Each structure stands twice: as structure tokens, then as C-alpha cells.
Amino acid sequence: MPVWQRPAYNWWTGLAFSLGSLLFILGATLSLIPNSLSAVQIGIIFFCGSIPFTTAGFLQNFQAANAADFSPEAPSFPERLHLLGWHRNNLGWLSTITQFLGTVAFNFNTFDAIYPATGWYQQDLTIWLPGMLGSVLFLVSGYLAFMETSHAYWSWKPHDLDWRIVFINLLGCIFFMTAGILAVVPKGPEPGWIVDLANIHLWFGALCFLLGALLMMRESRQVETLGAPAQ
Image 1 (tube, one colour):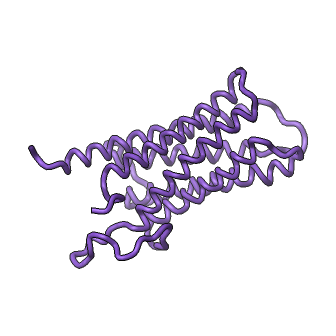
Image 2 (cartoon, rainbow, N blue to C red; image 1 turned 90 degrees about the vertical axis):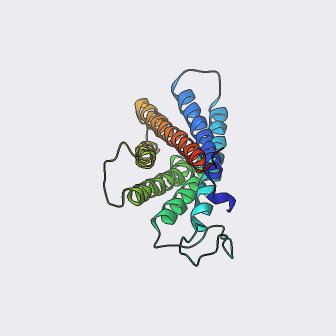
Image 3 (cartoon, helix red, strand yellow; image 1 turned 180 degrees about the vertical axis):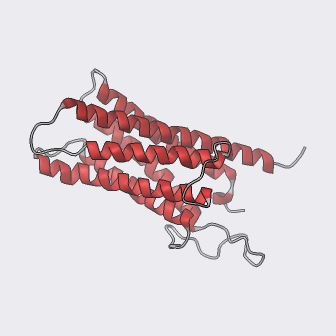
């Protein structure tokens, strides 16, 4: 069995999402409370958090791009590996590729925020725009994953672990979206509470992603245990 079809692969992917989420929670928390760190240092924390997010996003997309064909004639190992793939009619792949592209957008967003440009329009172009693009892609990805798991546009299955994972991730995407909207830099002065509100939404979004990642790790352990041979 290829490594990306093993439960441990999902566990490590969940761990990467967890690390990225924790760093975003830390960055948002430090942005809200008085502390000795500079804006540059807090920006570095956010950028460091974007890296495991991108790593996990790539791992999930790689898994979807090389998903097994469960037909009787299909080989157990694909003849050719795809780094990104192209399965435009597959909701799972569409969800992972949009999520991966969203994480790349957040790489630019958080990196440019370490040493932000001086002009408001330059900040919107280099920081807000990539962040907004990443938020939109995350929201699209989250809803596609929800649809794939639900087999419908909407469902309510709180006792289903797969459903809980995609639902809480979708909530995280919504919080990231609202945080992105609030983070736009206006031409003139703006109330300080808007920046705080954006960080609060970012904090809740990262918390949702953390919970979803932990549930993903838990699910992979359950699958691994069920698939283990009896002693």
C-alpha cells in the first residue's frame, strides 16, 4: 500500500495542520494582549505558522491527486505519481487544490506583513489582497470538503466523525474570511477595535482548524487500530 493511503499519513498531515494552527493562535493572541514582542517578531510567528499549513495542504492534495482507483482492475500502486494532479470533476481534489493554493497565498500575506510597506494602498496590495485571496480559497475548499462528506449541499450529522471534521474546518474558513475582510487597510485612520476584531476572528478560525486537525489525527488512529491484525 502506498504511504499516502496509510492512516499514519493522515496523522502526520493533521500534526502539520495543528502546528500551523497553534502558531496562528499564538500570533493572534500576542496581537491582542500587551507583551514585549515587536510587530516584526509577531509577524514572524504568523509566517512560521503559514509554512506547516502549506506543507499539510500539499500533503492532502498529493493524496487526492494520487487517490486509489478501487475498481477491480486497478493496480494497487499508480503507474505515475502526480504532484498536483488534475481531477476537475472530483470534489475531494478540488477541495485540496484550492486549500493548497490558499495556503500559498497566506505565505505571501504573512511574509509581506513582517516588514509592511508604508502606504495604505501598498499594504492592501501586498498584504491584504493575498490574505483575502487565501481566505476565499479556504472558504471554497472548506465547503467543497463539506459537500463531499455530506453528499449534499447541506447536512447535519454531528455524530459522524468525518462530518464533524469538515464542519469545524468550514467554521474556521468562515472566521478566516471575516478576519480577512476586516483586515483591509483604509486610506485614512480607522478605529483600533477593527484590528482587534480581525485578530479575534483569526484566533477563532485557527482554533477551529486546530480542533479539526486533532480530530483528523484521532480518526487516523482509529482507522489504524481497526486495520491492525488481531494478535
